[in-house]
Image (cartoon, one colour):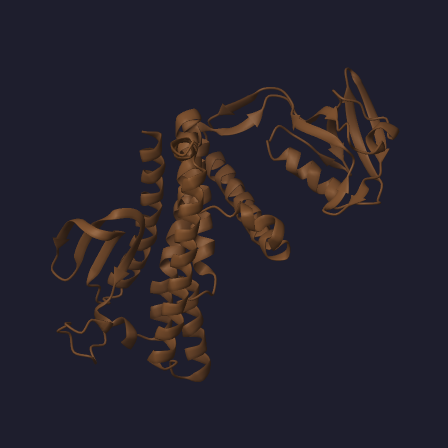
Length: 361
């Protein structure tokens, strides 16, 4: 059931994305002849007045079809309500609407997480030093840091109960190799101020400590609607920043981070584990995937929404669209590359599943 829950979350996010395109087109009177959730064989369909609605066998995808290039279309080629005959702005709205829908939906998922489930946080402020890394240099020891200390501030930045505080502290340490950092320590009932200078490593500064949150991890739902929307916005901004940071690392440090790229199988596996062990985080999981789906789709790559927007940008500069053969060639090449990458990730991640590996033991 947990796997079905994860697949259902992904299917809903894809449905939201395609609904964004569909609503943006129909609200402008643009013809739409197909709306499909999933790929592959049709398992259910309904023919509306103009649009065929279908559910297909593989729910990890979907599309909105326009009659512009349908050879069997009975609509005159000069019909102003064909997508290709609309002004650039109208087409840009339709193309970008899927991304916008995913971002809006992610925000409301986070508001729902805050209001009904709560964001996980520690019961006590600060970051706990679990232990000093045995294989590290003596940077922390020489600075007077001990296991069990609680770091309550660093460089005038105070640490509260958010689970993000560990990453905030790590960022301060990583971004200051060779520079002195003033840290506030709570040791029992004693408040101390220590100075530590992170050692320069390949990936930034390090002082050789293992960190954890301070106290137990709890969730507390926010009953005040205004506060729920504010906290949802804070979480939304944090995930956006974290996602862009991840893409930056993928580009600047491709060799080390490429192996961390997750495909559909891995995403479903992660979602299934969350559904089984921490159902309360499904809202958060959905928001995270929705934001990633939006950002990936807006990249200026062929076969993605961003690639189509790039064609519109070029059309705006030239005053006319690129020849169809060029657009089709680029889009088909991009589609084949994306399908190839998707198949590779699916095969790779399927073979790494524990139950699959047991079959070959």
